Image 1 (cartoon, rainbow, N blue to C red):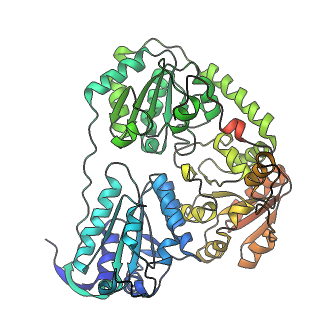
Image 2 (image 1 turned 180 degrees about the vertical axis):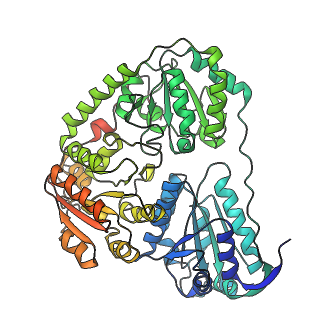
Image 3 (image 1 turned 90 degrees about the horizontal axis):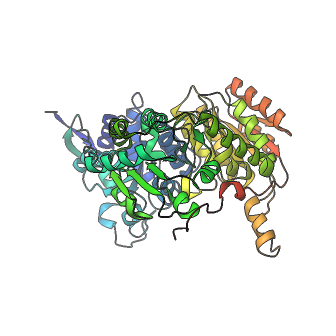
Amino acid sequence: MSATVRMSGGEAMVRALIAHGIDTVFGLPGIQLDHLFNALHDHSNEIRVLNARHEQGTAYMAFGWAQSTGKVGTYAVVPGPGILNTGAALSTAYGCSAKVLALTGQVPSEAIGRGFGMLHEIPDQLGILERLTKFAGRADHPTAIPPMVADAFRHMHTGRPRPAAIEVPMDVLAEQAMIADRPAVFEASPHPEPDPEAIERAAQALGSAVNPMILVGGGAYDATAQVRALSEMLEAPVVSYQNGRGVIDERSPYALPHPAGAEYWTTCDVVIGIGCRMQPERMMWGTDDQLTVIHIDIDPVELHRIARPDIGIVADAGTAVAALLDAIPRRNAKRASRADEFAALKARHWQRFHDICGPQMVFLEALRRALPEDGLFVDEFTQVGYVNRVGFPVYGPRLMVTPGYQGTLGYGYATSLGVQAAHPDRPVLSVNGDGGFMFTANEIASAVHHGLPVVAVVFADGAYGNVLRMQRLLHDDRVIASTFTNPDFVRLAESFGADGRRAETPQELEVAVREAFSARRPTVIEVPVGEMPEPWDIIRPAATRGVKTT
């Protein structure tokens, strides 16, 4: 049994974080967190603090850390406006099932809920956090902090991962108490074992399928070997949209871009969704009675959220697919290779991407050539970024970070700094539009300050391009609030001490990115562009069968 020693609530928090393997906290200090940051200072040989220039930056960095590693990304900010500034990042982590731990302070304990107007006081801060996280709690005494940290980690690692939050009143962080020198570490609840009967039914359906299809999401990131084996066993294509990219190397003919998957959907007789919602496929491509749907998810609620599957399996992706790999062979039809068929389908759609969105595609292909195989790509909501959902091959799991269905404009650059902090020796590419980039362009200062050599590309057209297009085409040219004035991004980068470059063509961009990766310095590359073709015909194909689920 661990000995107890006298320590502050802040010290108890830091020791609990270290015990749970946290070695980096993204944070901004403030009076309500003084004793937490004092303890972080005293343990700086065990846990580092990377600050940012805005609270949203700390939370996006934690999100980038979590999404690119699969581990917990942690940030700490003051209460009230501080934690509210991180709300978009928390909602993005929630939507992407990312393990992000938010730490925040509170007004003094005796003032909580009294409406005195204390510094940073907001009504029911804990209630707000409860709606953006899987677990949220308030520690009312220093002795409550270590078990609450363990509880937060247990929730993040049990079942469906999602963010957690802990608030601690400022007086509790300062208070001294006798606390175990070595905090207890959480014990994750075991994942549910897949129902053997459901596995048998799924194996029978897949084994007899003529045109099976595999859909994967972020829940399959840790089941890459099993998914590859399933694809080989069934001669089935693997399709993903945003999260889930790279579960199998997308240079493989069996990795179909999402629009090619929509075409294959017309003849698909059995689809298995692994760790994904299957939302765009079922709600946009359509379903009918000739399609058997198998759904594997760790979250039982997800199985029935959009539509009830024919076969639902509540389990961890790797465990469930491993069970299928054992059960399918004795039921599997004899299958010839379909590599040439899928390669041709893929090539046809690749050409279509070029035909419809040629300007975006040539830039994406230049970026793909410049980014090494192990490089990480952080996208954004921009004209090039939209097309990268289908037109930028991803070679492995967690090598592309996206905001998923949240569509969080402006998340990208700050997120890429967290990705770089987690992978200091690997190249990180951030692709932005000028609109989104300016949401967190102030974090160039953080990149320079912490030596994070992210290469950020900014496609500059002087507008929120998608909004501008909609105003012109869908709303009788009612253009309002969708254009803006840009800085000189090269000079902006240089003013922070980063490298600034400008590239006018895809060829110049490829050279500039390669040189920036070699220099290993924070870099911003401005790419002046005009209006680009509308991408939605390839990104959101029309229904290809049955009726849409609404």
